[in-house]
Length: 486
Image (cartoon, rainbow, N blue to C red; front, side, top):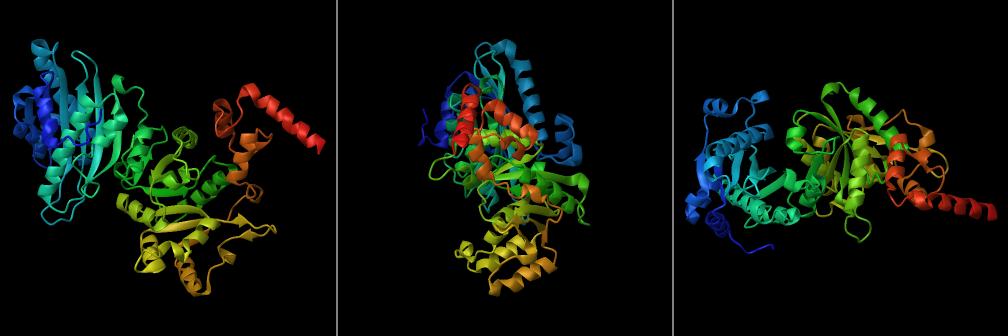
């Protein structure tokens, strides 16, 4: 049962008084703030086997080994810390108290605010633990960004979220959703952002980390979460460090041949840019919370996972974000990498970008949003659309209000916006909505409108409302009969 009003000190004390929970703490980068809560709560001898902080890099490398690239605030360092400390607890204490204890190792590696307040404050926090004596080990790992503007406040927040993580793992493990919510007890998103979470181990075998990441965004703990092409969760700033990001946004329910054409030809043009290194390009399909919702209904989690599975099968990374406006998306991407990025858009999306109504809340209006959108190293690649009369609508005949036309022309001339030129006109009649309706009706021929392997997945799993095999043939016969009666 979730005890929402339980304070940090109360949580630490309850763990201290549980004689089964016993282990060590290793904290690097902002003091030993989590361990300090357990000492201050009283009864810490019942919980703490050891605490340590190997601040000096030479000491740290001697204990945990070196890191590729020389970075210390990375997940690989955290995992080395957890595994070494947990193994030491088991090795030294199993014979003496292994049959009555649930061992754990808590670790974090963080970089807090420096004296000049010029650095990015973030860190990795994790727990390796048993849920029963002599039982298997599990992990819960999170990545956080600290938003307090004082070092001492960041240290305090790290201590709180560390206690929350330990308490959640031992007392809310039966409900990972509750565990996730409890991480922000006694905190606000003004202080801490959690942009990645990963559950692993036998006791979490049924947890889908993609859903946990979706809930991070839904609950406002972060504005974006990222999955790799293998479906595994990634920490955005680590996965996209020194990468060129090429991103396509859409509902992608399902992804169709027109999307594939957009991606293929847009990617070719992006790679032709002089300041783009092909070896560093990553392709991301982005789903916004808005695009995951259907009318007033909440997000269908199965539908979300279906879309992610399909996109990953095509080799895409997938991002779920709450950045509905493109300028906010670009501001976020510029935090992750300093290299050039490209956005793949249809001309209706470009039309929407030039709608001034979206920027009424900004003091500087559309100019303020464009200062963010186009001042970074970002270029928009626009896929044309087919007009009702059969003509092609592109940047060449783009319709924009007269007072904004000089602004549009400036962006085109200065290489911020460019048409995708090598498009397949045969695919341009395809729309996601029409394909989705054909799938729901089981209408013959929809398979030709999507990539072959996507059609295979949709049919195998009866996705997007496709009639299953038991009634699919009957549905097709009914359609043919109805057509014949016309």
